Structure formats: structure tokens, C-alpha cells
Image 1: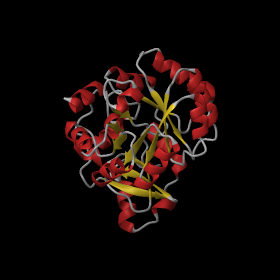
Image 2: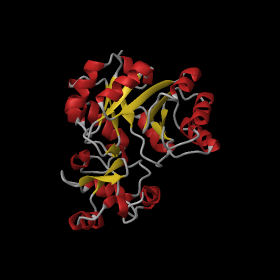
Image 3: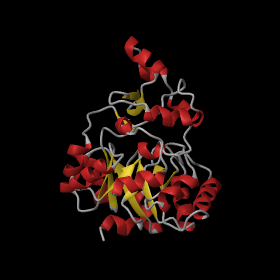
Image 4: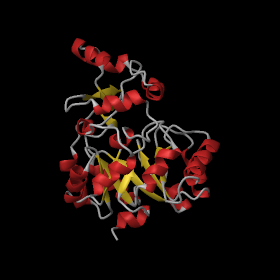
Length: 297
């Protein structure tokens, strides 16, 4: 059995990519029931009782293993959240948006598996050296938080990281069907993390308008929206398109604090809908089960 499947305990090496504040135990359970590895997105969750409720919600729907994501630079309660996860039987966490160096001792103390999300080969090597069980390598085509600096696509990044580390590598970005899945494996990855395709699924808690925006995307429909030292890959809606054409300073036009409300309500004038470049390959809102079954077929 590949090492990644030993770590995850799932049927397939397909990890649900966590999306901001979008949490739904039903979706996590749907991924698990279909053979994938569901993930709770705890990057912005600070209430420990809320964490317990979400874990209990997933466990009431499936007995399959699942994990949780922590955004290291975003949440002051990460160590307490780790303790709750360990208490409630969640054995695997992913860490992102920051260095895992300070949190790793706590993860090790609690006996949890941890996979670190990285955007660059050198950072993947650091995570491996720090004790990560696996690294999730997020190429420049990915949705979500990015940097404003130079980045590589997965076609370069995956084989590069595979040559640098001895732990399993997971590919994130540009994968929505069996072609992307097989390509990731051919590049040396042991698994994939799927964000945008699951975001547009029937079970996703995202507003219908967000899912429809993803389905409508072409190959030039997303851009990197600068947010200080970071950037967010988003869909170019009419308002954003006008701002780009006018040469406006996009970092002054949008406030990341509005992203949560926009993504919960579908009011994308507040903040554009996030999505990866793979949106261009997604042409239908489908059940999670269908997405996974097609991917591994």
C-alpha cells in the first residue's frame, strides 16, 4: 500500500481541499463515503465548541477517517484546536499559510499526522525536514491564497519536490478529472488535493452563484488578486474586470475581511469568487461521488 494511503486511511489518495470558512459536515462525509479524505476547514474557526460540533457532525454521518486544516498565520487558537482534534479522534491535520516550525512540537506531542501545504520546492524540503508525514504541493494554477512573487506550475513543481524529499508528495492545483489525476501520478505524486472541483459539487455549501461562476469559466477567467504580501486567485467578474481595465490598485479596492461574507452570500461585488484555473475544465455541477469515481476510473 502506498505510504500516503497508510497515513490517510482512505480508499483513494484524494484529499478534499479546505476552502476558507466553508464548512459542512455533510460535504466532508460525502467525500469520505466516496473513498476520498474529507477535510474540515478550521483556518478561521476560533470557538473550540464549534470545532467539537463539526467533528461530531462528520462522525454522525460516516465512520471513515477525515482530517482538518489549520491556517497557521490566521488563527491564534491553533494549539487549542489541535488538542480538541486529538481528543475527538481526528488523527490527521494539514497546515498551511505559514511556517509549521512552531506548531510542529505540539502536533508531535499529540501524536497526529501532519501534511504541510507549500507553494515552493524549498519550503517543501523544510517541511519534510521538520517532520511532516507528507507535503501538499500547490502549483501556481491553484485557487486560494498565493504569493505575489514568482511561482511554478505543478508540471515543474511536483517532480522537483519528489526529487528533493523522501516523504509522499500530494499535487494540488489544476486537477478536476482523470486526466489531471493520472498526470499528477505520472509526475511522481502519490495523491491529489482537490479544491475547486469539490467547491462546485452538489454537496458544497458554497452559494449556487459561486458554483455557476466556476462552471462558466474559460481558460482566461481567473486572475491573482493582490492582498498585501499575499494574493488570492479569483474569478474575474464584471466589477473586477472593469477595475483591471481601468488600472485601479486592486489591493485598495478589495478587503480580505469581506471575503467570508461574499463567499457565504454570493455577493461577489464585495469580494470576487475564489477558484483555480482548473475551473475551465469544470462544465457541470456534479455530486462528489461522481467526481471521485470519474477521477479514479
